[in-house]
Amino acid sequence: MDPQIKQRFTEDHLREAMDRFGIAAGNIKPLDGFESFIYEFSRPDGEYILRIGHSERRSEAMIRGEVDWINHLARGGAAVARAIESARGNLVEGIDDGHGSQFLATAFVKAEGQEPRREMGTPRLIQTWGQAIGRMHALTKQYRPSGPNCIRPHWDDPEINSLPDILPPEDAQAREHARNLLDYLHRLPIEPESYGLIHQDAHMGNFFVASEDTITLFDFDDCCYSWFANDIAIVLFYAVMWEEDKAAYTRYFLDNFMAGYRRENQLDPVWLREIPPFLKLREIDLYAVILKDFGEEYVNHPWCAGYMRGRRERVCENLPYIEDFDFDLYAEQYRACVMEGKG
Image (cartoon, rainbow, N blue to C red; front, side, top):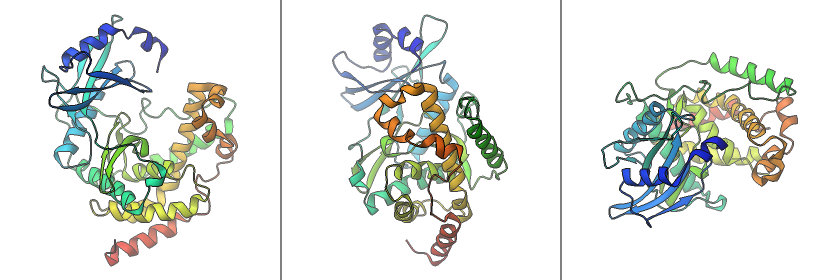
């Protein structure tokens, strides 16, 4: 979080947000938040999450676009934590920060269950995960923003993706690879059956598990217009991150994830061939963001240090994020599976 924004936030801002959403003193507690102030609270009608962000990071129109889409998904039966209205009937409440900008408060139904653990990655749960993403993609094809003040960016908007500019100047090779990658992605076709609003960060830290058949997605802060294959690639990116044999786990994961996915949405198998460039986009972007936010101090953050180990060399040499896995062959096998009606 921007230190200046953090310094502006006071107890008065929190009390105002509590008042707007009918939260009684003593019924709220802070949670960890990276880019926003996050709280858990209870009311007689249920358990909820309060998020307080700032207009200098996400505009009010962008946040309205986020919650408008989330509630469209919820109405369609998607496994998402819906946004709730304030006492004034608003999904987004602006609170003056005293510096000419606003803190923006939103609240959501608290997801049931618990954060998933790696050992919970059973075939059944992975299929449920895939089904949840497939349902979301099917519903996004029908989505139309409820008004001109509900805006979400496309994947290459500077607010979402600022590659290659945020890469260190000394990483000339990485910057060149990033530019070539963006050029390639800009040539991909944009069609309603394969492109729309996506979560863009639906890893295991952004859903709760109530059972192997029930998950709830949340944290749609990064949602944007992009290819559905990009959403799938980002899920896979984090799923295989700490696996010793990434290729073997990729096969296991995709077999189950896509079996669940196709219960809800039909995606042309040709898009599975594009997973490697989307993986590379997330790999370079995460590498750049860690360097931007932490500099060389990332070594003091265990998760970042683990990810960055050997990463500069891999990014500069443009090595595949998942080696020894043939996505072209997998796409053909998936096509055959779909034709046979399996799964």
